[in-house]
Length: 218
Image (tube, rainbow, N blue to C red):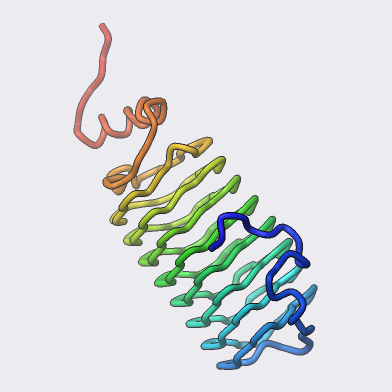
């Protein structure tokens, strides 16, 4: 994903090629340079592929996108709720000022994906693979990354609440930029993460409890 993620539709390199989409989403359909606006969009679209597509102010509720593929897509000002994205594939994608809630994305693969000023709530990413993923100024609440594989993931300016990392594999995961690290039961999954000194002090009670250490000053 480019280091500068466009905030406006017109700034996309393929903006002049986009054509509007109407009608429901379809299973195994190939969508190439398509602009999805407003909505809501419904219908089973498992196995569909989206190449150089834009989603603006899109309402997705209960959509079925299992094993769908998203390559060079841009999602802005959208709400995706109770949508199935299990085993989906994402590459060179960006979410800007969007909400993802009640999402089932276990087993998904995300590579070079940016989330900027987004809210992720009750998102199931168990067993997912995240590589070169950035959560910038986001709220991650009740996000389950149990058993996931994270490589070169960062969270600058983001707040993590009830984020589970139990059984996850981390490599070069930079958590230093997080505003808050709320890890209820996944602190043992922090092996391979980079944290700051202040964060280490905040997590110390969890580490002590996991090791069976009682800390008393008197």
